[in-house]
Length: 250
Length: 250
DNA sequence: ATAGTCGTTGCACATGTTGCAACCTCGCCG
DNA sequence: CGGCGAGGTTGCAACATGTGCAACGACTAT
Image 1 (spheres, rainbow over the protein chains, first blue to last red):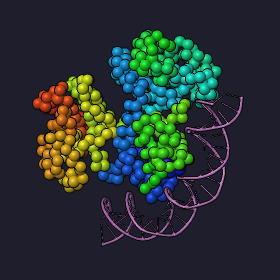
Image 2 (image 1 turned 60 degrees about the vertical axis):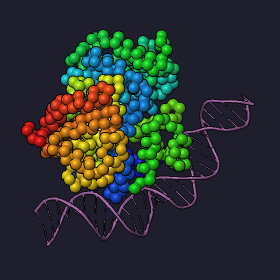
Image 3 (image 1 turned 90 degrees about the horizontal axis):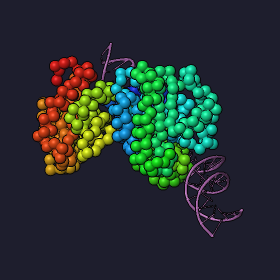
Image 4 (image 1 turned 120 degrees about the vertical axis):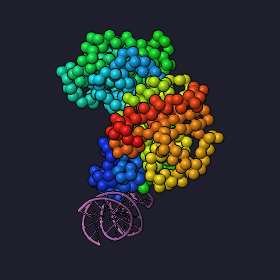
């Protein structure tokens, strides 16, 4: 693996925290500033970073451009956008779209709640595989063997009293989710947040994404969140249809 | 400058076009596939790329995470968000936020029109410096010397009959913009789109961003777009105020 | 004026990167 | 079922590339 690339990416990660000077960045990598300079010059050329008038480095527009290009490319995201926006408008709650990607579950879109108190998240962040409703939906569609493999690799950090803490418990839950067609997170990650999630399928019937609603219990108690299920399931079905899933399937 | 980093970034750019196999990527770079593999492994480790079950590489969530983190960090963007959303809701038109960054003007936020026919743009893309209203607003705030330097470096591609085609014409326009406090793009980039833009200032009075409204003339003729100016200027003032600009300044 | 801070350039060295060739895995087709 | 081919992966030797040093230059503050 490439030391040079790894260093360049560490520079980007550091700049994600805020602006930095050349010296700061060189020290961070533990390299001579010449080295850092040249990595940065390459990054600057492709507009991944830029320097302001005070010679501070910042993340640049090339990064934004690439990221939004990549997000646009995901067919599901585009197909889901209008439906998710409508669901967000109808319920007033935070709506997420997540996908499975190389053993992880990541958020690929979000529509914020209009309530002052709301869940914090960001596109690109990973969901906790043993907690998040979207993760359960996505994992539930994997072949059993891979499900086991993934479950074995999870760090079952007990975030709350409700958190599932063993592979067995998770695998059992995944069976339930696969059978009934939706998943919940009943205060398993944050003690004051409940979520419900539903699968989005493409033309082949495979689950390509999961849509969810997340609600702090000061806004709606658990039972009331479950009442949002019909709207969520209808949204997920509509998105699936736009992705080419034949009607009546799944 | 670093050959390795440049190659890695070229890989990312290529993946921005769509999924690719290892062989395709190696051929693209003109290197042995071993080389491409190791670059990709480094990128994969930081989640900038991932491979699907069919061993195709895609842009990964690390990229999204970094990009949204960086966008969140820009104070202006966060401060502007509610005001721009309100402007978008009130006018129904496409609203952009742009910033000056290392000799370029880039879009850092957008709110799409609800009309079926609308301007195409994407966060991170560059605006044409001699056409875009946002570019004029941002350039107009630069010191005269830098204004000249930037103007000298522009490629004055004549996109339409109205496009400014000389540095002198642009510099004269920038004086006008600086004096009256807003800019327009009267079909200078696309023959069927008009824009107006206004400056957002921070506590020091410097222009840190530009907000704009873009309207295809099938939706509103040029004169009607100018009627949106008061709302745009009010929005820009409100954002400036939230950025700490003392009232009554500028 | 002067000292100090921070970014840039030229150059010799050696480390990290490169390409090759052989190996592996998987899917395809006879 | 067995051989073939199309990818992807590993070990290794050569050398190009990236590295650190030292000297230089621009700016700022005192």
